[in-house]
Image (cartoon, rainbow, N blue to C red):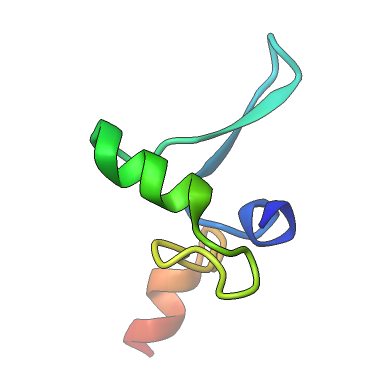
Length: 60
C-alpha cells in the first residue's frame, strides 16, 4: 500500500520529522478496517495526486 500512498492526494511530507503522513480524516473503525484489509485490493480512499495544475487541466 505504501506505493499507492506515495502518489496519493492525502499523503503529506513533514519536513521536520522527515516522514510522510496520511491526512485523510477517518474514525477509529474506518482506520482499523483500512489497515487490516488486503493490500492487493488497494486503498479504497486512494485519490491520485494530479499536482498543482490538476484542476486547471480538468477545466480546459
